[in-house]
Length: 251
View 1 (cartoon, rainbow, N blue to C red):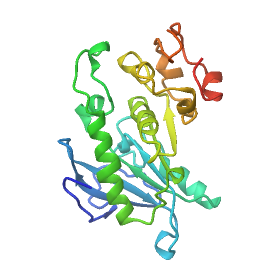
View 2 (view 1 turned 90 degrees about the vertical axis):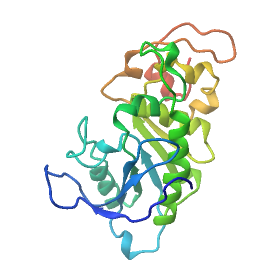
View 3 (view 1 turned 30 degrees about the vertical axis):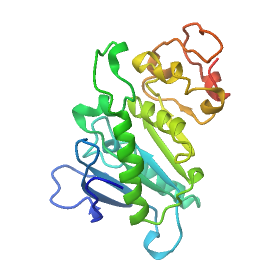
View 4 (view 1 turned 60 degrees about the horizontal axis):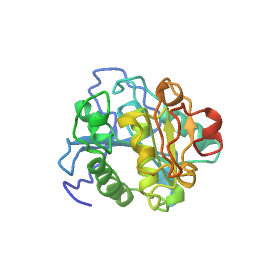
């Protein structure tokens, strides 16, 4: 771990309540986590029922755009209800810990992009994806593993997000399979920077098997197209199909 290391977790939410909260279950917050020159942010952790009354260790899922995970009072695009889903899974004997990491507002596009945007319609911009992943995998994950009883093996550690959050999640799973054993990439913005995730050879058939495409509001890859080079010549520009995702590769 590096940067400012804090371990004082508060229960969330705390009064006074300015807006109605929709949190379900036991959620904690760690204020002002920072590192790598990035903006500080609060980190939210959902703990499964009975956590304080057992010595069991739990799988962990790291979610991007954490403002949307648990509480409509924080959400900028509507609450996902990850806490509600986790409570339902726990009732079926599948408890887990969820770590919700908020984006940095105006820096979201840069933090969730591993590559400069010079080849994108969004123009040039600083690629802070590597710095963000260092903050997530080293500082935040380190604090979480020290603070809570987590299963630290890759097969019990997942990462997920939607749109640009899905892009950085997919990149993290492909670039750090020793850390993240599975990925939830919901409507991932893989078109960003003209599909650099493919051009740079990360999306091989073996690597694509890590990805699971979930239908999101943006549709298949948010309706964009790209040209992909799989090391076997230039592939024609094409949309990614559900069938391609189902078989774990791009055709």
